[in-house]
Length: 310
Length: 259
Image 1 (cartoon, each protein chain N blue to C red):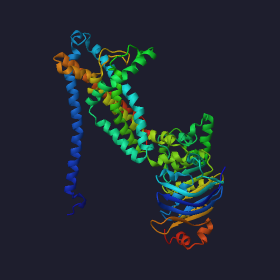
Image 2: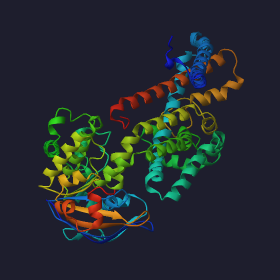
Image 3: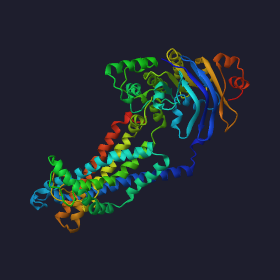
Image 4: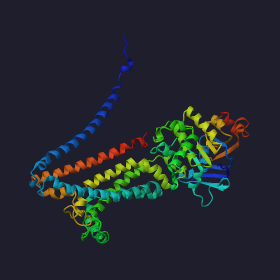
């Protein structure tokens, strides 16, 4: 009788393989379980606020009337923060990766990373105690010179604790995220493509436009989206800096509010339906952040054919 | 439009390390010159000094003169960017820009320095350059597709089309076929034969048969040992180098006794 010698298994190696694949599967599932658990909690706890009679909700006009001004406030603060932070972050990242002498580059990279290590409450305190009073004269100037624009309509806040100040603080907070991710991506640009551009007679800036930025684009998009995630969810800094109020178009008056700060400021004293209302607000923030991430993924995959991956 | 290159007493350094020493060579316009020699002999390094691409590496510098029709590439006030528009380069591994279409790849060099070009002129230039690189018939129906979707040999010919689109005086090729299969290699070699009607071509190759097939003149580089500088041993007509070299080292190398 003959046996197929190929069927004898090398026991130990196979067992290691099974353990490893099981561990990775478990880790992957755990993420889904946690995500599902959080979503379930938010939905279940939010339902009372969503079905309650409009008069019982804070403000007295129903959940939608309560939520939309702070959704808008959240988006305004986050978008302004990104508009300020993105060009600076990409500039700093390019300087570190392609312009600075090597020794200066590593020092500067370290300093930028340190920005990310500062706790958000410190940023909030800095924004409220230092930046706001320093910047309020500038708001006065904006109100008197560009006041015809709705976003700079006066009278400017005398304390400087406005949504624009909060956005500036947020931009400093998202700066290190976008910078360090972009820098990593830029450093990975294939030498081959950089040399191809230079050999065609490109200047350094043209080489960056031709080889570095197109290669890094998906990475830049994800860096910005991560920054946006932080800006949307940031609580402490906004709560400390912004003197909140009703939704206003002007960025230099006090007013506006973000979801995260609204929850943080009201949760400790809330009870009953108010808790549900705040959790529903949290659910809305969760959905917005999820949407942002999905859009980012979609942008990245849309350009897959032209990415360096194939 | 092609210029001759005269190199006088050129030394190439990486930091304090002398990589290539004392090269004197005169390369005729509208000819194909091959650089051969064992690995590490400095032939690629020397090739890169002909369009100042060695400056991409930190610490690399040269002493001596490289004259392009009498103009020193290393003269004071000479911008390497200008040098590279005159002396194009094709690399060892095909490197079309992955984020660009085939058409945009060909036009990449032309659109530099904010030069404006009308769509008609651009279309004509794309066709002319791709025909010049023997690639037009293969890609004319998919000019808007990414260049990275082509085969290796097609990508390399796309890189040649990109280099000739800017109408350089000289084209340098750094082992252009070493990553290609024999069929693609043949296509590129045929192309090199056609290119010399209009351009001065300098090619580095590890493949001695290739040097014999494509070049008019051949330069043999060698090193005495690890850590020693590479030197130009012999430069002559290709037939002389392969059949009747004057140096013993050249004869040993081309007859396969070492390298």
